[in-house]
Amino acid sequence: MRAGFHGLGLRRIGTGAATLPQAFPPDFVWGVATSAYQIEGAADQDGRGPSIWDRFCQQPGAIADGDDGRVACDHYHRWAQDLDLMVDLGVAAYRFSVSWSRVQPAGAGAWNAAGMDFYERMVDGLLARGLKAAMTLNHWDLPQALQDRGGWTERDTVHRFVDYAQGMAARLGDRVAWITTHNEPWVMATLGHETGHFAPGQRSRAAAMQVAHHLLLSHGLALQALRAQGCRSALGIVLNLSPVEPATDSAADAAQARLDDGRLVRWYMDPLFSGCYPQDVLDWLGADAPHVAADDMDSMRQPLDFLGINYYSRSVASADGSWNVAQGGLPLSAMGWEIYPQGLTTLLLRLARDYAVPPMVVTENGGAFPDQLQGGRVHDVDRTQYIASHIAAVGEALRLGAPMAGYMVWSLLDNFEWTSGYAKRFGIVHVDYATQQRTLKDSALWYRAFLKTQREAPAAIARGN
Ligand code: GCO
Image 1 (cartoon, rainbow, N blue to C red):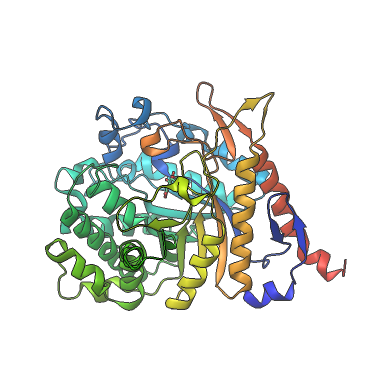
Image 2: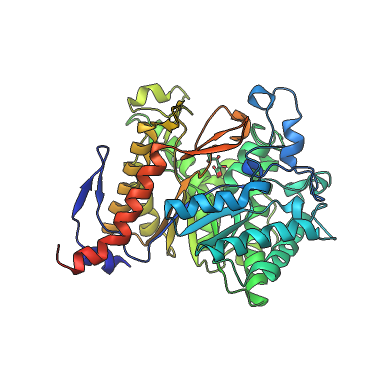
């Protein structure tokens, strides 16, 4: 793959925003990503049980404008049309997630045939269109029934997840190219259980660390179980990672950056690749460190067929907490996140240097910007520049030796952006929530044109053009 990239040379096309390597390897996988709760809607239909996000959205003040995912993009009913959009864009792969409570409403025991059928129809629909399926098992929407029994703080949930993973793989493992166990365990642990910003809204550092441990453990045990049952899908996990940079060159900020890196990056990467938790973080946690049973660390470290990385911005550490994004001097997205594509190159190279990483896929990257739909067009120059510059950053990491295998835009559609509700739009396709009409934004048109150059590039070079 790396050789392929070098072999194609570095002829460049201008985007106005960034310079892109003209040709990624021919087998580099380009895709778009979504998640179940953010797009499906049909929350009460065909036997779906409630998830922790359904419950969380009911808490007054939890979500901007009191929004929820009950209807979202109505993808449950419009999936075929949405798959057609992907064909139109020319992507090779679609990363989606399964709503656990749709297929197994209580998170244990009985399966819901109608829910399973939905994902089967959708996966068959992808294959019929020549698209690869990248299935995520857990994109945050734990069945509420399991939360009522303690959720991810309870070790029993680990075993429930393994059963669920086995059920999904038994049904769809012959057709999905990739299976991801968890999406962003840091978010579920930290935002869900330490700061309480996300479902289930708990506020305990000890609980959060136990959750992180159970997520990693259930990942490892699920991989073992899926391999034991002969699942042939590529198996991996998706982490949200960032380079952590000190706000100043003071020793205190450097120490803070090291700790933050430990909590965000090494807490997840070290057990997956080295079979241990970072000692500096364990020391800092003290009594809040998770309970780890005898074989857990071995169970967690399973060979990965791929590693998914979600990247949006860098992280900046200041010991006194005084740093503010405005000080960075970088442009910001509508989320208030710094736009920092070179951080993605830095991150990918660091992972490749410090760990024996498998092929890496950027499984999410994109931006929310204030879009205007006018005359059937959305001129989202900022988003287009964001995506183009981050694809260039991936190309740079690849050129410098990181084993990059794919890139997926977050997101195909505007969708339910968690606590921001529908106010923040990440889609390259605009969704009119009143009519459910989809409109390709300029960023989608750009991505389509870019992917066309990628398909044509090898032939063009072979012809010596
Ligand atoms: C994530 C999230 C997405 C968010 C996106 C933008 O995995 O971080 O999967 O669900 O919508 O990150 O905040």
